Amino acid sequence: MTAEIVTFGCRLNAWESEAMRLLAAEAGTDEILVFNTCAVTAEAERQARQAIRKARRERPGAEIVVTGCAAQIAPERWLTMKEVDRVVGNAEKLTARAWTPNAPPALVDDIMSARDTPSPLLDGFSGRARAFVQIQQGCDHRCTFCIIPYGRGPNRSVPLGRIVEQARRLLEAGAAEIVLTGVDIASWGADLPGAPRLGQAVRRLLARLPELRRLRLSSVDPAAMDDDLFALLAGEPRLMPHLHLSIQAGDDLVLKRMKRRHLSSDVIALCERLRSLRPEIAFGADLIAGFPTETEAMFARSLDLVEACPLTWLHVFPYSPRHGTPAARMPQVPAPLRRERARRLRVAGASAAGRFLESRVGLTERIAVESGRVGRTEQFATAVLQGPARPGSVREARVHRVEAGRLVAEVLAA
Image (cartoon, rainbow, N blue to C red; front, side, top):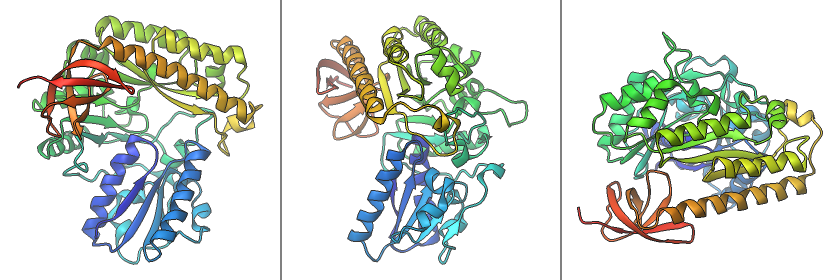
């Protein structure tokens, strides 16, 4: 029996879950449940604990293993749960020794001493049309709200040859689209000989894989865009017109207190420049509501930024204090107010997304089909297809209407 893995959090965790599934199968593990945790918010950790307790009630004989960022940061917290059999660190979970029979109850080393990036080669991605490829791990920045560097360690880049090999294998397995993922992908290459940049990696990857039809980037720091990336977004149709930006707030004082490397005007200028280069581009963004010291006027500037860019796809988080971070020691916004501001940001995001979707009605979209005649457009909109649509294919379809936050489109004849 292969490992059953429950994944919380980011796209990188999704890639790692597939890698662990492969490693566990190669080790010949018996019944095993793996919880790949996230530590971005307290809510993410709460959901993981709840899922673990439920799993133990339903599967009393299964071995339960906890890994991921929350496990790396505080392994003892998970080991004290009576439902948990083993805890595996973030670096160790991508090694064969973590999945051998009779592995120790705690296999968690100092992540800050990690210098390499284990990158098992996957032959598929659970049948998905979009397949993730890890290109780096860790983060060298220290945003005041973020605990993730202590769960992931320093920036480590996967060599380009390994990235190309992994992408090629996934394409051969039927992937229609490759998504480059990591903790801070814009820092890719800083630790490699010659310190290449992300844009250079994208350019070389596309050159070496002419069969790669669609390439997408996961979250990018707006302060770290390089000239190659701008040029590729302007002139390379295989690089999708969609960029998810790690923005976090729209007020400059809040951004400074977060220790971000951009101001709101930098984000607006970036979006304007990219839209001039690629008019059809759509932007996503991570935004935090209720950061410590945030006033109503400061919060309103985040709402303004959604409209000014505009930002189409929002990931909104109410601020969650993380023990050991500088922001946790700052004057806190009351939790109910944080949740209310997050709700208002989500409403603004839904409105911006609705306007974008309506603007696509009547147009022909190229859609990567995932399953059940549902797929993604180049700008990352969800589309429901009418007509033949084989999972893993890319089909042209004419958009007829918007329904329940999704495009409804008719597949055109091949």
